[in-house]
Amino acid sequence: MTQSDIEKGLRDLGLGQGDVVLLHSSLRSLGHVDGGAQAVIDAFLAVLGEQGTLVVPTFGALGIITEVVREDPRAVRSIHPIAGVAAIGAQAEVICKDHWKAETAHGEGTPYTRIAELGGYVCLLGVDHDRNTTLHTVEALLRLPYLSDRTLTFPAEDGEQVTHTWRFFPGPHRDFIGLDRLLREKGVMTVRRIGNSVVRLMKSRELIDVCLEAGRADPAFVLCDNPNCADCVGQRAAIRRDRFAKEVFQLTASSGLAGRYVPEMLANLSAGGIECVELDIVEGQPVQTLTEGQIQDVVEELRGGGCTVTALRCSAIPEAPEDVLDAAANNGVPRVIMPLGSTSESLANAAASRSLGISFFNTVQGSMLATEMLLALREKGYEVGFTFNAANFARAGEKPFLYSFKKKLHGFVDQLDIEDACFDGSPQTLAHGNAEIKEMVSILRCASFGGCMTLTLGNRHVGTLRDAVERFEALLDAM
Image (tube, rainbow, N blue to C red; front, side, top):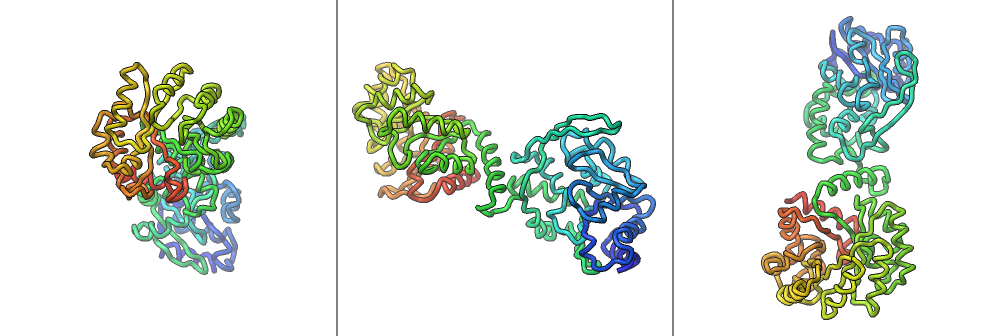
């Protein structure tokens, strides 16, 4: 390859006089080039002309072409310790000015958006979209939940040390390669071959706009689907946490659904984007069979892992219910959840004496009997909640939304159990049974329900916590 060969290839690609180009490159991809990196740079500058501008990123190990541009005496460098560029040409000063002072490293007020504003291009010469820094611009403009702040101290223009924080800074793995097909299908990318190198050319503004549209539709649009990629699993969890935090209700999950041991629970809750847990089963044992010391250890371990314990839930009425109530009160757990039954009044009284919240869930009762029992407790002055288990009402032969909820139960509901079942009792995936769970979630959201929606142990019959989270998220998306 000669400089003139490269010039012809760049013009055939669509570049011309006065253009601005952000170049990501691999010299090796071209094959042998007479004059090496300098010949490639001279070819670009010849095609762009005196009014054009060549820009390269200067952070990381980005290749010999970038190094030669950076060391060129004509080059203007943007001051930024982790996202800087170097530019040669008419717009170099405009592009590089005050880069470090911007709120983000790649968003508004940075070289990457200025190139777009100038009608410039992104060129990938022998590299793929994993090297396309402008895709970080899209992430920053979208303010995606998995991005984080980055603070560094570095020398500014006058050499004085300054400390600055950039918001929405990118983190680990991305599946930027997966965007190649989208950009081709949208017609915003030209692909040609120069020598041995596959070269991609895109208008920066069009690249950004197409990806902004994709990111608004799916905040995980640049994350991979590999369940063994810890980076993308964690970033998807951040998206879910952000999404669930915007709901009025509090999303919780059963400890038994989350895992057998606390470390497993914490890992699965974190991957699901859930920060609250209802303690019902630990190491296969119902919470009512654990000692107060065991409960204390579990609660402390969960809290130490950043998880809030919202309630202790008993699958059956304990022989010594005061032990469970004491364990909750002494360990700062605000609620206990018990089966609704003949002992509910004594349980409500014991909870009130300990300043604990108490909520009762339906087991085999129909809604008429459940309503009568709760109203009787209220008439005696007890402030109790009701954990509405739609799946159990379906097992009792009722339509939970069309019938059960229409009774006076709605005035007691402080928790909705997110699980599904058929009238014959068989567990089902969410919205595939007779529990009318979609309708229940929808009506409570319409009333700005501030209680808990809990992914319960019943989901274990049809999948994992991750499955339950994804199905619940899909259910919300369908509303």
